[in-house]
Length: 185
Ligand code: SF4
Image (cartoon, rainbow, N blue to C red; front, top):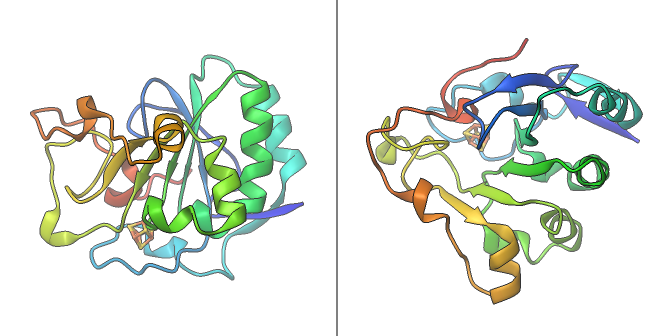
């Protein structure tokens, strides 16, 4: 299966795209067109690189010192089948999964493939980037409207459960690179 990526290879050792030391998969293609997005080069569904998911699995096999994988972009939820395949493999390897999306969690529940992908995600950062809600003081998100969601608990309890420790706006400056700058390598 081929996945369209903004960066050919998985970026290693990120400390701004979720908890711990993370490997980031930068997907290509996003339908949201958020005003102020700093990754506009990831919006087109025709650009980037078509990469076989086998190649990504081979990269995962070579990981050392990565706590988990973060799907970012672009919007990974625009390629849920492809991301699901990678997430399943990563889970088998004991990695935790974070995912950034411009869609709202509730909307994802209505799409069978996106819903299946959610089953393998530990933490979802959802919602569009809103310039008027932009914050420099919240970890792992670019604007206050975005929620850092405990997906397991949310699915079990049937309500959105946010991770309080990250949803409080505080003095941390540990930012997400999803909204703020292009870190492609
Ligand atoms: S901020 Fe994220 S969801 Fe919004 S346009 Fe940019 S890549 Fe897409």
